[in-house]
Structure formats: structure tokens, C-alpha cells
Amino acid sequence: MTLPEISTPALVVDKPAFDHNVATMSARRPGAALRPHVKAFKSTDLAQLLADAGHLDFCCATVREMEGMALAGLGHDLLLANEVVDPVRLRRLGTLAETGTARVTVAVDSEETVRAAAAAGIKEVLIDVYVGLPRCGCPPDDAPRLADLARTLGMHVRGVMGYEGHLVHVADRDERTARVATDVAPLAVAHAAVGGDVISGAGTGTFDVNTVVTEVQAGSYTLMDGEYGELSDLPFRPALRVVTTVISVNRAGGWAVLDGGIKALGMDQGNPICAVGDVLYCSDEHTVVCPPPDAPLAVGERVALAPRHIDPTVAKHPLMIVIDATGAVVDEWRVDLRGWRIDDERHR
Image 1 (cartoon, helix red, strand yellow):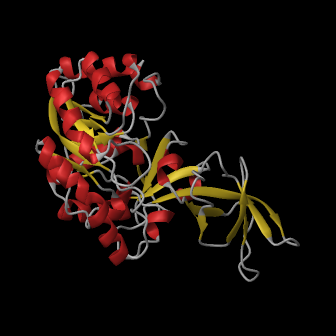
Image 2 (cartoon, one colour):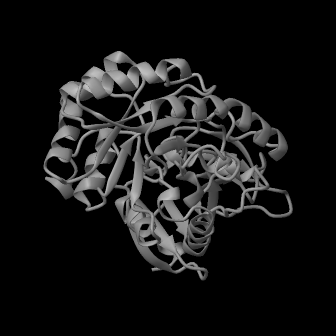
């Protein structure tokens, strides 16, 4: 099968670009210095390739991802980098740890999340510390108290984590570096008080400027997207496209209609990028583009769209089609970590 034979809209991965990204990151952050974040790609097939490259520890955003990784034999060291208080879901994680299916660590940032984890049988935690992103994380000076509480309840505190997500897309590298140094400094102070071997954090945009962390929680680097593509200093290549087909052309109006829209693209960061025309708008099933007058599109032509944000884009598709440099299909990667429960055909 070749690219023109694929039914669209389709999630397509450029394997040479992907291989470059994996090799580049592995050279900079080998082994346990990188904890790939599976929320970016939601695929155990892709995760296995990262494990083959020496990265055995993974970071997850949902209990579903944790369970799927464990069932795929990728449970060497799994971190749920998100607070959870649902006792049913937490208990499922506790069972994974108790049965030896996976090493399970969860993020906690309050007395409530510490107690919920302990009640579910979770044995290992990281104290999640606020470093400037208005999301999860305790005040840095509260981290020692929470660590003491966790230990009192019988849990091992592995260290701390903090995510400077408000800085990962800062365009100017010098500014990004300076702001990361300032905002992440309290994480080092918290770690000194909490103890443990782990300082976890950072992302694709700050993987090489955050000098505090012992491990980087990057995932987008594997495939890249439009937002990260605007950081010219990153050494990674765009590897993911949503391939569509032109289904209608309006010559008088100067636009063409593609068969992939909001239901095939993550739109939280704006319209996708189209190399053969300007995107006019996206609707449920369509993207409308305006090609240059001297390079019109024809019905049946294939058009690749670069999503601005890969995480929600990938989550809309059941499969990634992998192509080589010639455009030939060489593999398929299941997007098998979508959703909130293990209820797909693979695990029934």
C-alpha cells in the first residue's frame, strides 16, 4: 500500500523524521534521563520503540494509559503525573502495583490526594510542586509537610515533580532559558526538603534548558506539531500529518474542501498548517483551504495538514499509518490508549 491508497482522513507518520527525533532525544537524554509522556501519542506500539531505544520509564496522564502500558508489558516504571481522587481508578492502580504488573508512582499535591492514594494501596508518590503554571501543584513550602504525611501513611516518597508548561512555547530561547531558571528554582528547594532521587518535569520545549530535573517528561518530540515547530532552536522534525482528500473545488471562489475537519484535528491551538494553501476555516468534517491561483487543487488530490497540537489530534484516531521516505506504508501503530477505560477489542 502507498499513501494515495490510504482512506482519509488518516493520521500519517513520517518514519525517517520519527527515527531522527528518537535518536536525537536519546543522545541528549539517554535512558532514565527521559521519561517519555505517552499522553502525546497514546500508542503502546510507539512506546515500545522508545523502550527499544533505552527508555524504560514512562509518564502517563490517565489511569487508562497506565493500565494499557502495563498490559503491554511496559510497566517497568510508570508515573501518573496527574492528581486522581477517584477511589475506583486509584484502586486499579494499587492492584497493578500489588500484583507486580507495574511499578506505579502517582503525583500528589494535597492532603486529600495523599490520603486517597494511601487508601487505594499506592505505595510510591511524587510531590507535585507549583512552578508557575496555573494548574496542579502545591506551594513549594508545603511540599515537606505532604511528604511527611505520605511517609506516615506508609508510602515511599520518591521525590518531587513540577511542570513549567507556561514556558515550553516561549519563542525566544534566551527568554525561555531565563524564565525556566527562575520559575523552576523553587522545585530544587522543595526537593532538598522532601528528599528522594527524582526531580521530574520539563517538556519538549524545555528539555535542554531545565537543568534542575533529573528526568524529562517529554512526549511531543516524537512526532512534533505546529506549536513546537515554531521554536526554531529545537532539533526535532515534524513527523505527523493528517492526510486528507480534496472532495470539492470552487474555482470562482478560489477554495477547495478537504475531507478532514474538527473531528480529525485538535483545534485548541488554532487551525492546522497547510503547505499548499491558506486555511480558511475548519468545520466538523471539512477543512476549507485557499490555494494560490497559479497552483489550484483538484478533486481527488491528497493534501497533508500539520496539526497545531498533536495530543488531542492523535486521540481522535484509532491508528497511525507509518510511511517511509518514498511514501510507502511500512507499518501501522495502534492508538490503543485512548479513552478512560479498557473496553476496546484488544482487552476484552
